[in-house]
Image (cartoon, rainbow, N blue to C red):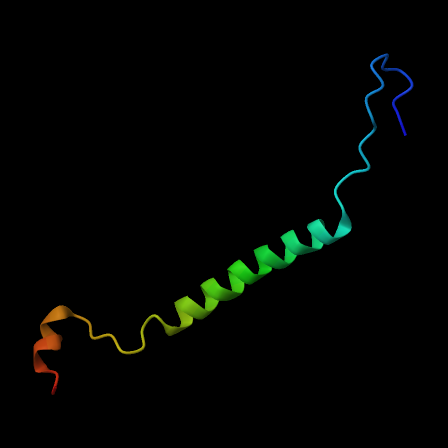
Length: 58
């Protein structure tokens, strides 16, 4: 289908395919899920303040 108002015969875009839209939405959701997992596990295995790390039994 071509734009009838354009003399050059430029085709009219059919828009963004739905699979691309849903992939983008899924990607953004996945970014937030991974960020939540990282933040929830950030305190595990860490010693704070740094002076307490000297008391760890190796």
